Image: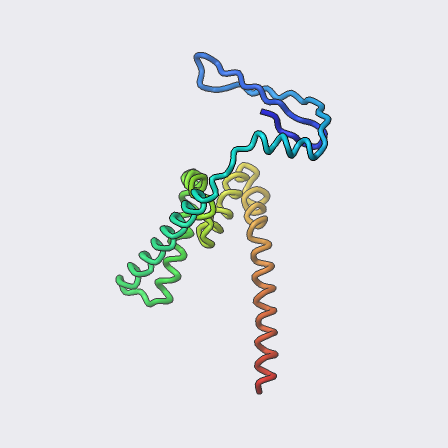
Length: 180
């Protein structure tokens, strides 16, 4: 396997041990003189074509199943006596919890590999995006590891969300003043 990075390519050799299930990986740096066009042609030759229609169908089915499950949860919570607003809140909490739990168990990534964008239904995708870095960097500590990596995703979302809310509030205020 050759991976290009800057002016270097790295060739990875895999040596499997007969009596052990682990593999030894040796990486050797090689200087490669390729133009960008030559490299793009090389990648096109090596890359497998993407089955776009199959991927679209899987994304549609999985995303639809997640949304149908969310609707089912909302109906269940309303049946159990929650108001529509409370049922919506409990549905969101449940979907966030389930996505984070599946991320922690490593199942969400397996589902995402097959379903692709279907798992990016906003609430479950956001939950996965929050939980993944937190789990990956937990060894660096709660503040500098987990806490800092949570905000690499949440930070831009919060900044743009709050900025949009302020902008919409100003527009609403101006429209309200113009109509008065």
